[in-house]
Image (cartoon, rainbow, N blue to C red):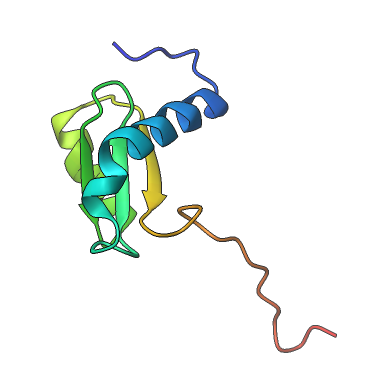
Length: 89
């Protein structure tokens, strides 16, 4: 059963370690730009063009699992930007 007391930093640390040690060499560079979603307790993972699709497939196999995602070939899965409306000065 997943540890419900995990903080985001713990999830990130586990996910990064699994990706670095077990998965990265299998997916880079031929899956660049795709998402890898990892269930951090089992080490099982899914690859997809969309993170939501990969997460859904993974959670079907691991209901209640704890997941972490990365985008192959990028330092983070997501990039936050501020969109400026045309009417903003």
